[in-house]
Image (cartoon, rainbow, N blue to C red; front, top):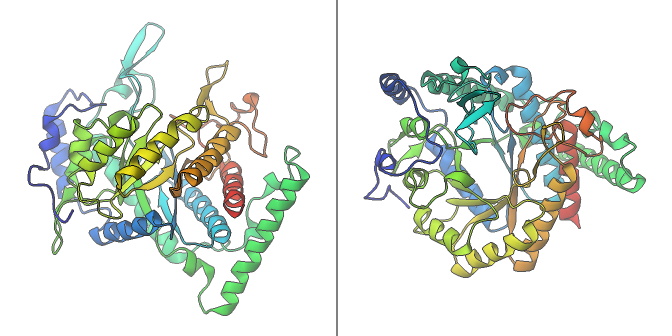
Length: 452
């Protein structure tokens, strides 16, 4: 697709039904916010976007692997050096573990610098006798359960842009400067290896993998003049769900010497499971942009509908354009994933398959706390690898909700987070995330699976 479709425009999505539509009371304020966003400089460049398309095309052919991860919903308050550094550090450390195990380059994509909007199952929330709009993320309203906080505020789109700009600017600075301890696994937080919940065999396997990784990285440094910091932090990309189309379209534009339109808020926007209707506003908007596009695919998807959706979003079957992110849930992945893989494979459509083992595995405890179980996440991921191998398709990436901090939001893992531990440090305003140790352990387990 070298240009936008002739029947598409920046505003054509407004003629379609928009799922998850935000109702603003002050239309003049909305127009002012959108006009302001249109004048602000882009957060990413078209050259970076085209580069990511090339890397995704490589991953579609099995030459690269994509690691995508970050917050379920960024908050404006989390735009701090500590929070950003922690998230970037865990993603880069996970990527080094995967590179060492798979012996292929890893494309690093962060779920941040724009992940400020969240879809909700209901447009309202009721507590006691009070019903208010649901919290749709800091791009729309605030999490506090008050009438003022939950009222959608169009100026938050501008504030979201400003915080995304600060986040990506700091990320670029960190990447250019490198992380001092990134290439020394012996300095990583590996306390989970010593936990009683870990079998001696698995503990030894983790330790051996960590030792070999450290030796390999030091050997690479000894061979060349570059440090592994330089070698491993060359490219990093951002992603977020393109939920608020006012925000997305306001930063979508043509650029000199390139055809088509680019969404310049992020390198890689995706369409959620709740907004992938083929005749809906989100698909209409996404079909006209040059960015690589992701689509979440849940267990209710019919293979023929996914093929039809592919034809709308990538009619020319261009490499590097389309990523399908399946999120089936541990109880349905065995029965629901294979027919979709077979249907798309039989159609000859070119896509990159990524597994999101987080979103289908939400549970609620007796104390009404939303959480996820580490074992369910791992099981869905391992089953997905096996199903792809059986069908003959390539699972080319993984998608995690995680943080680099010591939260207690997901159950299990070697650190043994229990239900009673969830109240210790549950910080997410929406969905539960893997903490640092759980995320790093998962990287070791994925690496072990790939090695097997």
